[in-house]
Image (tube, rainbow, N blue to C red; front, side, top):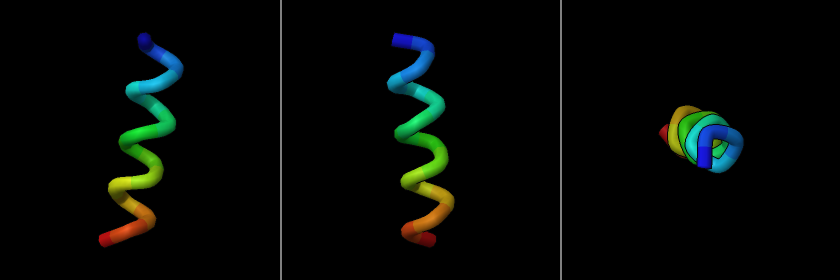
Length: 16
């Protein structure tokens, strides 16, 4: 779950 959270955060920042 932790790894997924990191990936999600990176994706969110990239999408912004």
